[in-house]
Length: 171
Image 1 (cartoon, one colour):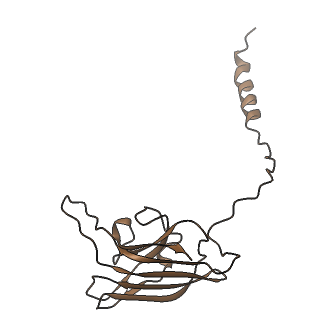
Image 2 (spheres, rainbow, N blue to C red; image 1 turned 60 degrees about the vertical axis):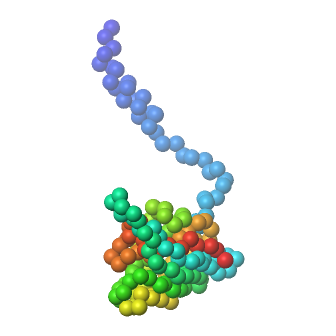
Image 3 (cartoon, rainbow, N blue to C red; image 1 turned 180 degrees about the vertical axis):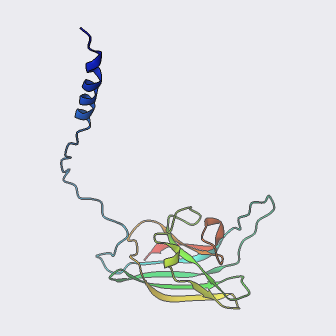
């Protein structure tokens, strides 16, 4: 008896039986809570000091440090709002607008910001190289973990464009 013609249909029936979806039983444990939300204990406040970053270049020559310093404070206001205070002293001699972002991890990590860079209000820097940002924005602050703020050279958004950085501490 020749069984070759029955091989293909039997194989397809076997695969179809294996591919049948079975419901997954509830494990009883709740889904992990997001760490980017308002705290039930009250307002969340993160702060840190901006430190000069080592200049990155593709060449083999010596590198130097950028002379940029300052302070950052982020405070939750409830309802997904955050107040921002950034004071910055830079080596810039002309007025410009600098981008910044809140990122997970410590300074120097290649992480992406918790929201797009375009959502963070720009820091206006005057002719004297000093910038100040005091504003409020729609942002749920993280309640735990390690975070930092990068401030980028004008037009930059990459790790290689970081002028100064602050590792944040929750207070």
